[in-house]
Structure formats: C-alpha cells, structure tokens
Image (cartoon, rainbow, N blue to C red):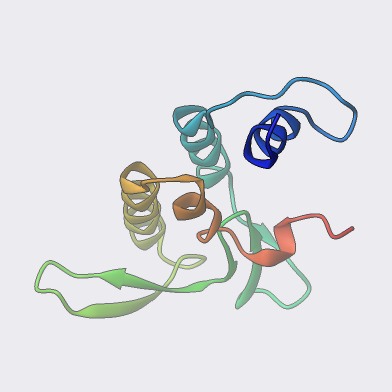
Length: 114
C-alpha cells in the first residue's frame, strides 16, 4: 500500500475508529443550517445591538437592495428586515458549492474550541 492509499484509508475513520462517509452530505448540512437560520433572535445584556443568533451577533445587518446598493437594517426592530435578511442568508446557503460556503456564514463563537 502506498502513502496515498494509506492516507485515503485513514481518512475514512474518525478519532474513535468509526467509519465515516466518503462524501460530505452537503444537502443535509444546508438543511440543518436553514433550521438554525430560522431560529428566533435572543436578547443579551447588550441588546438591542448585540444579540444571539446562529448567523449573527449584531442586530445591525447589511441587506442587498434590488438596485445593487447595500442598506443597513436593525433586525431587532424591523421584522420585515429580519425576514429579508433570512431570505438573503438562505439564498447564500442554497448557492454554497461546498461545506465551507455554509461554514463562513456562521460566526466563529458558535463553534466549540478544543
């Protein structure tokens, strides 16, 4: 067995030696991301500007306008803006070509640190 075959064989197992999928379930990742996207905003002691949501820490977000311009909106105060923002993030999720296209949409604080 050469090095390339050995690396491929090792990559099919996780740290516990359990067999892993050879191909990432991108559809499953996107579906799960959408579930988190549609969660409600949670307030913090720094609200209304600092919030808790799986896809943002700030109530102020950028929204793409039909004319190509960018507008700022407060999704805590404007429910239409919150709905539009979720639609735009969902479109980014849908058009992601790989798992990293979804990963970069989630703030770093939502990932466990070793």
